[in-house]
Length: 283
Image (tube, rainbow, N blue to C red; front, side):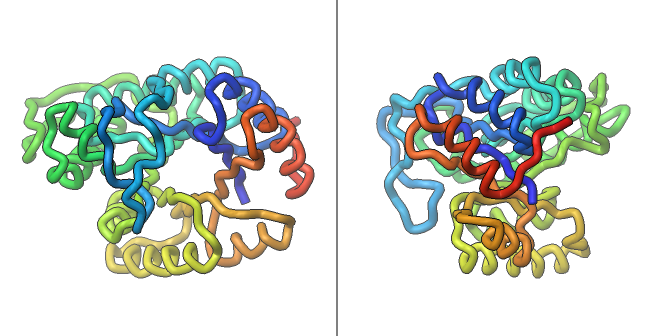
């Protein structure tokens, strides 16, 4: 089991201490939340069945790739993830360049978590049609993947149209940094099975996670893909190694954790959790 750390669950003032501790203790990855802008009026939620936004518009938001580059410069082993990046709000040239640059600077440590987005007012503020978000995301994934792996790329699609271009240097990870598709809807799961290297979910218990994983297995089969190597990442409770084994048994490959109740306790919480699950600091 890989263990990632959810930076969005503590104050940005604690992030560097949390990252330094996570790397020292042997956590596999750290994950940053992402928004482009937060309108003063918001509705809906990324959590199914919840119509209340999980964050206030006063939430501190940073450019995720600039901040992860800062983290990359002060670390050497911990992987750097977005949970999740709203790719559809950006031109794929801009997003592909940001991912490529971070992957090169970090010597191949990027985990690119993406989503279609849930905040309609954010799309309206960016003057983009929220109803097209799924199609825009699909097209952007295709373009970014080609830019990262092909020598010359030409594209003529619904949202983007360009003559042959070149895109250098390529990311360290080939054919691309792992693309993990976020979202709990059936459309998101279909996208993950069709175009992703894995799926990144929210908080689950083992029963709800197993339902999603079973659905993903069926969708992977529909797309002629094997579940081998397909990442399953989510948040979930762990009280001991028995829980870790239970998560592994249903197919979870990475748990993204935040074992603290307040930001000032984050470092201590990471230390307790590392002892609980037997993490081993890197040599």
